[in-house]
Image (cartoon, rainbow, N blue to C red; front, side):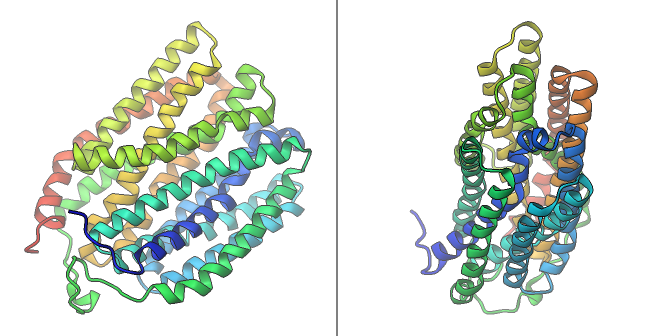
Length: 418
């Protein structure tokens, strides 16, 4: 029987989804137009990779800082400030004409966006019950996927009309301003009914309900962190360079290369629901479920490597790369978005959320520059083989961590007597 949600839950879910959607618009827009920006500036992929890597490093490192701050100051304030600074950075990038200045602005932009994820997870944990948390988190994942779909339709459409990528950044900044004001004004009205760590609303202060974490949690957490790094490399590394891969491998125009990848974002949106169903129905252990997904990823990358060695098929390449990115959306949902909920009794959920997400963007930073340099040195097909190896590494790490995580859940997270 479906539990009836309280009055403000849909508003909380959709307002945070709107903020997260906008964050993706203001953070991923540069990535989506990489191939066009590169030809416009006349710079190599590795030069542009410095800009994107700068954002990723400051976003990932900022997750740790913001995670700690999120346990001490108002999450709503952090989200509002983060969106405001990100909007200003998207205006500033219009006036940047060199890689160094772009990198500085985009590093600031990365830190600004790090002020959203941990506070959102904390708001969900404080104001929503377990069933409501799942409802809201699924919509948040839809928001990020829909933002990528929007960008990959919107950006090439305007580029095709000979509108500069710089003007597109200004248009998106206008959307950012509108959403920032909406969140700042409306969030005061809907975050009104906090709940405790469990379904029961006892009114006891959160600090009084904290339960120390067991020592045994640190080893599986460390293994999960490394697996999340591998996931970040595949999730953003493959996604960021796919248009360039299609442009350089098959010679299709830049706008078409960007547009053709919209299928990745669409499937990513659908895959969130699919992997959530698989997790809840078949693999309740988050880490084992992620191991299965890493296995599928490694197989898809290996098949792509073999295919590329003998034939040249853009359709088949796009299909297999779509599977890879969709699988990494699943790992992101399970390890980065769902697993932090297991730490909620510690009273440090924002901190753990920030650390786990930082690991994902450490992987993203490594891959954004690393894949570009590797492809320039060894070619794209050897880069695909590297993806398969990373997928196998994620599989092994998750398999080793599975029994330890099961014990942690049994003795701490899922024990109603604790």
